[in-house]
Amino acid sequence: MSPGLLLVVVTLVLSISLVESRPSYSYHYQTPGGGHVRVSHEQAGVRKTEGTPSPDSVKANEAALDGYRLGWATGDTDIIIGVVTDTFNFTWVPEDDVVSKDRFPSFFGDFKANAEADGRAKYFMRFANIIHRQIGDTLYEAADWIVDGFDRGSYFNAARDGKVIWDMATT
Image (tube, rainbow, N blue to C red; front, top):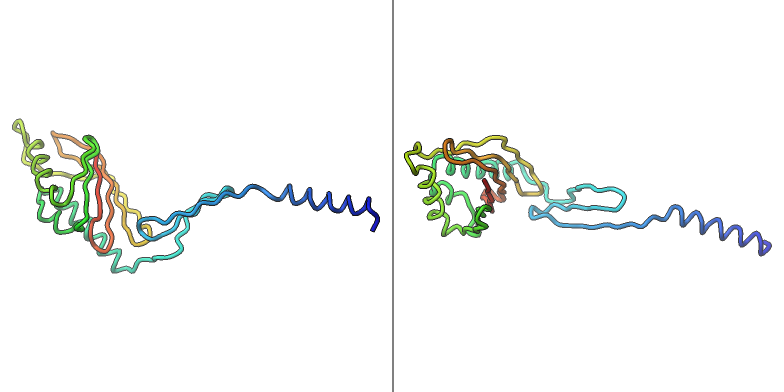
């Protein structure tokens, strides 16, 4: 092969390599539920690679979220405390207040008292626009909460292994 032809072939291969070679950025995260999120430069996507929950696990998480919501609806802290983990935290976003499981009954008592103050009706909370999303072994819930005549807001929480693991709410 002549040197000129070799230079043309090397130049052509190098040009093709440069055209086809794009910078590739890839990030990989593990979600709290054990799933994985992969984001690449060319395509952003969510890919679950492990941790497919059993139907019993999904039902247990749904039951935990249903019970938790029932406790909030009726104002019963025993129900709420009965379906949360020992490490549960509730974040009241308007005051940036992170409430532990131990402190929750006191926080909730104050919340109910404020809802019933000034002659308002007996406390009852209702919910609208409930959305569930399963990622790995964790079931997430987002919705709106409403206490008629008092206030309304949105919340986001999660359950794993049949217990609510955290919650955050705002007005």
